[in-house]
Length: 424
Image 1 (cartoon, rainbow, N blue to C red):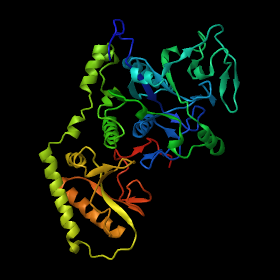
Image 2 (cartoon, rainbow, N blue to C red; image 1 turned 90 degrees about the vertical axis):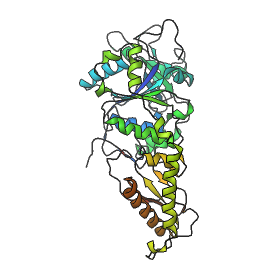
Image 3 (cartoon, one colour; image 1 turned 180 degrees about the vertical axis):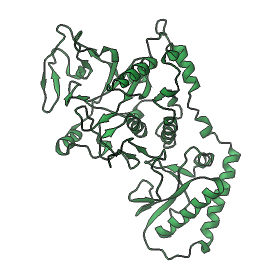
Image 4 (cartoon, rainbow, N blue to C red; image 1 turned 135 degrees about the horizontal axis):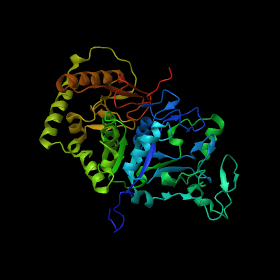
């Protein structure tokens, strides 16, 4: 970003921060979290933790818009839900977040840091704290629970930006808030809420699709060092699915790893810290060609030999139609990366890394294809210490089809995104 003469200051930031907080779905400050967020995103409790929501957002590559209910009342005026940000410098956000969390206030230390210039280009704007004249405004309700300000005071299209300000009484100016409005139709979403009290599928939620902007050098903020591995897993999956670019995410900051917030106060200090916490992804995508060829030659050779050796298949199989693959569990292993680079592994919509074993056009019944996949999986484990299992779909050859089948995977594997609390 080009710096002008006066904007290299410790109190300014190049980023907008979208943070996630713990949410109680049964409280008056609820969110409308869908029942279904993908089979590998499992909220087992009405207490939804901030890390779960961060990973949910990264995996779907979306920021979800809302009217930010507090005490059961919308805090965002107008008809449009919005995505909220703060333009506090990262050091200030971390210090404020830590202090406010200690007081059980509504904030979290899990966040995305997005370049402010990118977000401005797609419509994010700073909020308006109060209007000319009185510090209080009157509003009327729309057809539902909307809060609509008289458009003579503030045009309807700008009302999502309004934040109440009353000196000494109500003051949110410390949040330095920005918002992005969702302008599309919310009829289906509101209809589901009204009829069922919950949304069935995450695809119905109003959201900002991060694919709509060419983001580069974004950051992720997590509370603990142990979170970093899971975030890298999710980012790699986005890239391998061709959803995000290799340069979209630049750094991960672990709050636990910081010596002090003051150590990243000034812009050059923050830049130094970011450079020490870069997400080095190049090694995952630049496996030497001779290494790639060696892996693929050996693996294809084993599969070809197995395919032609009838002694491996002595059971009687049913007549179900479908297809099978080998689901590789570790998306950072060198073997996995080599197979991706050579086009032998693809990633389905749920983030499963699937090794092609040339069965799509085979006349074999599904159970026989599954048997072959299991043999290959066992061999990969013994030969490369690479954990995997079979994966199959019935009635189709598309790996995004349902129903699908696979062996169980440890629920604590990074493939799964689970809430910290479990109600049962």
